[in-house]
Image (cartoon, rainbow, N blue to C red):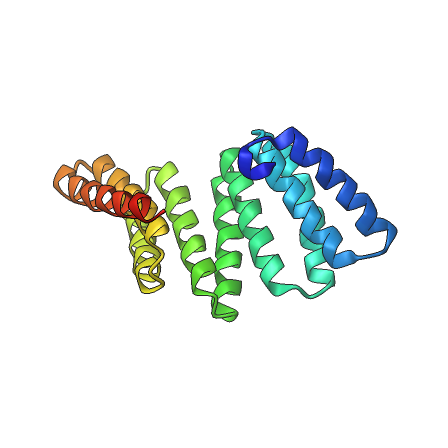
Length: 188
């Protein structure tokens, strides 16, 4: 239901899942479900409520020593704080997520954290810094041959260049992104 943007229905099932995980004392499942609830509330544009779930999830991820889950949850906290305009908090969460992904040698999560940092800096008007992060993310997505994320990152780069008045670079990024998107759509 969450992937269909039917967040209320997703929350119904996640609440049921959460009660079962708690009943059988499955802390790892409880932590994952709390994170999913946070994402559903983020989808409903309720970042404050999402943060409450992410904070509970983070505590459990740390308790059960799930570093990957901890990194994901830190990134989610960064996204929720960004929605609230809490840029410094968002940066701190994304930097922690980035550190964990590098520690675990998870290149996809590393690229995601770099892209998230680029988005935060871009929303702060620090477009040069955003470009640095987007370029790093782009390199990794190309290395991983993740064409959809490559196209998304190129679009973000284009927006950052356009904000700096560098329309030539922006248009180059947008053209590359469009070509990749067409390629991805043809293969799906």
